[in-house]
Image (cartoon, rainbow, N blue to C red; front, side, top):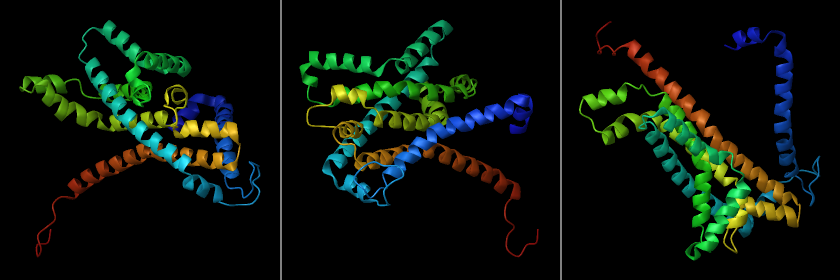
Length: 290
């Protein structure tokens, strides 16, 4: 496929490759500089770093402010991800039951619109809701729900793509055989979209874990998520402790996102192994020459 693509591009291939490489460098080089400055043995962020030391990582991992904010971000992001994954999957499945194509397009647009909504406007609106409902003040409920609604479109889009790959004849065939919709959902649709559901949940978790705008407006006093802790640290003292924490967060995000291609590779390897075993045929009994 790559050879065919290269031939179709013709002389445009070289400038496209150059632009792609420069774009990749603009994304990778700042991250490498960030990582390098976290290895410094000095007290200031310098590049090249002043010596090599991992002491700043130890400082971050031993500081209660950083560890508590990490735990808070972890469990709120996990809870918001579960909500976003459930609602996004139900929305994608429910949309397939809408027969009117025009209504389908409008509903799909409404679920995707939050991606284009400015986070600051969304945060101000939720803050107003919190102020009008006293029982929400001082709680993390609004933050969790807000994060879930921000991540819901990502789950919806990815799961919808998985549903589009399901053979449309499966549901009518199951209905003809007497299966009701709960059985069709459990036995046909959910197994087929499970990889897409997991992928959407992983992307939602990364988006939620790194979100800081909502935290600025909705966090109860005395509590901070990890991104908010990093933002406050950057305003107070720009030390290598901040770059060490940023490196740890970036590493966690890359690790989570790496689960998707690794799981796909494992499934492909397992899928190729099953036909190979079938092709070999059953093993011959002992003492019998095939």
